[in-house]
Length: 155
Image (cartoon, rainbow, N blue to C red):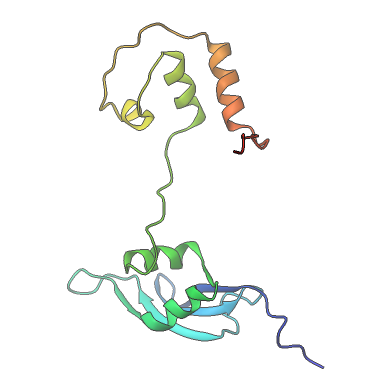
């Protein structure tokens, strides 16, 4: 027969409705294995990203039910997490850094010691003490970017 306890992870995600270039979304709790607009467990709200006449975007959320699903381990997708964080239901998501590896290499090569974001956008005009050889910098950056687990001493 059918085993109802073997459900996959629950995701909080959007189902897309509307027409071409005029979307609106339904926030649902759904089994992660189901299609985007497929079967869902519960409707948790709606979101209309089109600007209203007063310049706002419309979001209606069932706050108590969203808190329940989050408490039992439901994972919001990126878009749903962005909406939930702006509503204050989850912590704000970290912003994606625009810094690239080449920025770090160049900064360390010039001997820069400070916040790389300030260096890239030009807020901090620190004069470097002495240039560092490119090979040493590339090795240091490769070591910090490597995917090998770093062993730490446990006390």
